Length: 235
Image (cartoon, one colour):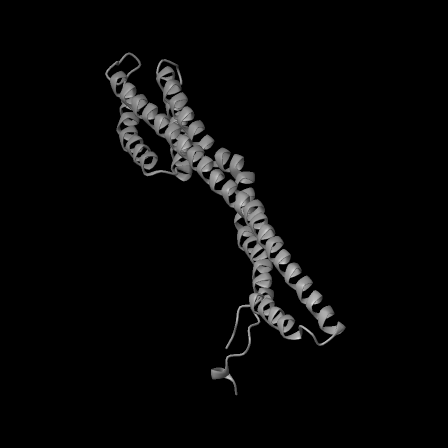
């Protein structure tokens, strides 16, 4: 019959700390890696979204201005290409469903407006309300971009709290709890062994009192997880 001795307890306690650290280390390392690349992620995605929205708005202003210029049609076509390029950039870096919906709405609304711009005369103001509506959609995309960035920042803060908790538990709480456990168990072992040694010294001095000393030794060994074998399990 297997018994959990004090030596087994000490070994298990000693193994828990490195086991916890072994499990927690990849998570902690992943957290450091995530926060290391967070600026790059923001720049490649959220900042790209913001720049794309600003580029769309700038292209619209230049289209409206270009209508009054001698080479207005070429200006409008050039800014239309820039606008489409910014739409593609925004679509490629969108991170939420709301952003994608806004971008698709802008793309669908822009095409007929651009057709009207190419056909309208410089003094025709009928396109102005449509341009303002398109600018409103771009402003809505900007708000969605800001919301997505706030969501990313909030998610990063939440993950940082989790990684901090994991680090504190794995690096401080578990080792210290195990240290106090091992310290207490070691004290119990030391006390029991001192008493066993004293009893053995008495037994070495003479036969008198050996029975009581043997009982005391037996009791301490049982406390340490080494009781007398049970006759029922004897071979």
